[in-house]
Image (cartoon, rainbow, N blue to C red; front, side):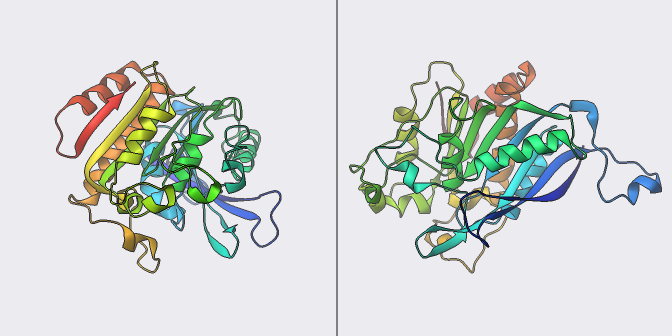
Length: 327
């Protein structure tokens, strides 16, 4: 299936210029024709075979350009999904300006958490999805009741924390890589506190055994340093109850924090804190993309063949998979 994309922009309420604008890249299944009249068009027509399309909104990690996740957006759009990546440069903390997924730290404090959303950009993104449904090339082709939230690092946490039908009833599932829900000491949490999740929708949580960012951030949460997977495992064990058999924990053997991105930005400090991956990153991305695709096809599109394929993939011996749990 051919994938094409186009750009949009939107304003975030409550922020002052120039930090009030997000820039979106929207990927969709396209139908190509050899007729010159269509080849020369700025935007290719939509492939209607799998419409209406579920929508995936992906939240990048801090200082990770959306372009680094284009490989996943293309993979999902090839399966018949519309995928939105976005960049937002803003002052997320006093004096700290960065590319960020829109974390509202104030809403993560102990007295507020779980009473309101923690995603600053999500209301604007959902409004943009409704606009795309009403005008333009995707008009009438989106499934507004099957929106999936996904992300990496802090963006993955934004995704799974806000996949709550009480906040956003149109969200159907969530997934994230390289994250956990520990509460930071700076926000007033006791050491080692795992914050709860809504636990009302399908969830896919993926981590790597060589995640140096998680291991080197332990002091923020008051836990012993050096462990890449314990906060991820505890999130799966303690933040959700499960019982529907649609929540997954997958640990990848030898994957690091940036196995999720296409290429590292060596000009930034964060990648320097990561541990080396022990397997080719392309191998991890191929596996991550396939598992996320099958998860969505199983629990959002309700395709029985995808469910069987997902079970087979996760239960077959694979040197890239350290462990797998489901509840």
